[in-house]
Image 1 (tube, one colour):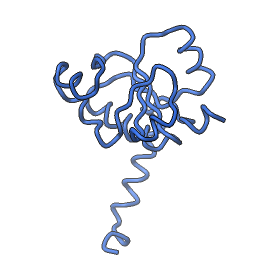
Image 2 (cartoon, one colour):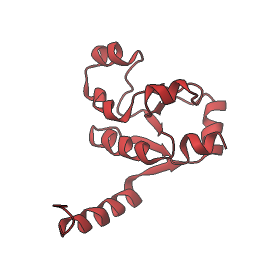
Image 3 (cartoon, one colour):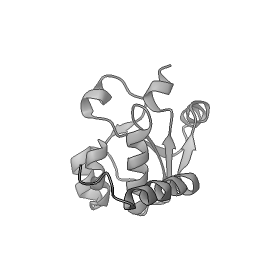
Image 4 (cartoon, one colour):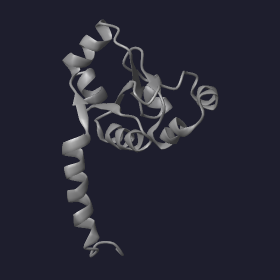
Length: 131
């Protein structure tokens, strides 16, 4: 199609790759389990669809589908009205997951651009959690 011969394309993906390497923190299953057991203060955010979320999720997690991630730009009371939970402060830890880590990485990137400083991707996500 129209974009296949676009030379920008390659630069973008290599740029995204370096971005991913440097600023994207990840966590694995055992460390996430520790955090849950210790009742650490963090928001566990499931960015899958509500249907997927209802089909099973990690305990304590809240659901904001990745396509709605911009709700994190709302004022606190508006955010709470839309999501049903308290909006985290930008210096609070937010751990994101989806089914296999892809949508979580996109959400992580978006949240970082909105000023969240401690966003961590549970890269294994639901597939890893249930394996």
